[in-house]
Amino acid sequence: MPIGTTLRTTTVLLGMVMGATSHVKAQGEEPYRKNLPADHPAITYDAGPVRDPVGELARAVETGEIRLAYDAQFGYLPSLLRHLDVNTDSQALVFSKTSFQAPLISPRAPRAIYFSDTAAVGVVRGASVIELAGFDPRRGAVFYTLDAARSDSPRFDRPKGCLRCHQQAATLGVPGPYIGSVTTSVTGRPNFGLGTVVTDHRTPFEARWGGWYVTGTHGSQQHRGNAMARDPAAPAGLVDPARQNLRSLQRFIDVDEFLAPTSDLIALMTFEHQTQMINLLTRIGWEARLADHDGLLDVVETQARRAGVEEIVRYMLFVDEIPLTEEIEGVSSFTETFEARGPHDSQGRSLRDFDLRSRLFRYPLSFMIYSDLFDGLPDVIKEPVYERLFEVLSADQGVDGFDALSPADRHTIVAIVRDTKMELPDYWAVE
Image 1 (cartoon, rainbow, N blue to C red):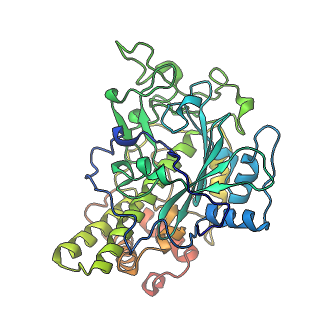
Image 2: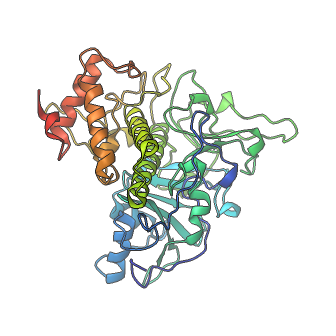
Image 3: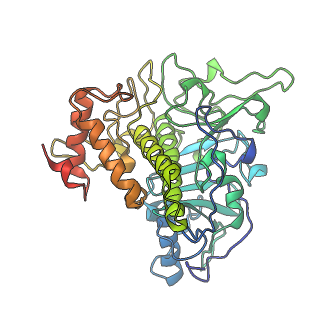
């Protein structure tokens, strides 16, 4: 294996974010996308060196360059998060049994997920492995496990079975993470017959976070988090009014068993946006690589590329974001630490700055424009994405279909990107 002898290939079924397989439905407005061939010569998902942070950490651990510290209570988790630059305040807790570790998951023992722009880590109390995903600029999401038991030589694996759940319609047909909303019983068992949706910033607030704990305030807006259906014959709990606007999870779990006492609303919304941004960039990038390799540069493919570029641009600019009707607020430090990551322009502004009154971000252009995944797009996609972004953002009168962006929004976003994004096309620099 490219990551070395301690990186074994196994057949574990990994569910990094929501491993509910074929029962999970993508958003209603999303077209069905068949799985793209991960073993295609233009992709070689399982071959060659990886360039994601988890793979790089695995190599460093194998060579002895890095030693993972083992905590008496939390095992390797704190050390992993530190080396992957993942903050503990990104913690999100999911109690639905939608993982290969389902027997260990329940409302009393939820799975904890932590994330950054480049990696995600999932852990279940008492599990034999820790789940990880790194985001490679060419492959997209790459999935791993780490043996949880204390060892002089910690072992990372790349499980073969992960793509059974993590390459499907919910991930746009490429390897990727996703967040799903599902109704569960009091034990955490999902009831897919009551409806399931893959969520992102386009999802109505009231459809989000079934099977998840959610802390934070959001006024009269209601979500499906913190709720269970107690009577399978007469299901309730899709939305539980008594479990909204929670500042603490102490009524559900022993918070001392987790690195943070929260499952932060703002972190969840940020991760929702990020997961489908990752999948969309991966999907359109793979399509271009496959077509170029196979010589499929006909009229149909050209039209498909244009459509893919437009889809990326619309998603990056939050065009179809569901507006907030009241102000929302998290109860952890995530809002502050996420904004502090920057980069910031000469006036201290950042694409990471939150709004939280009528929308998620103050300046609605995805922070993922700074990601290696965006920079790693094939030029035949990245160049027209830059062109279309600039066309929309610099237009004097606005552009049809992008009416939600005010002139002030567009002007400020261009100024921030000019100041903070490396290797911009020259035309972006022209005032």
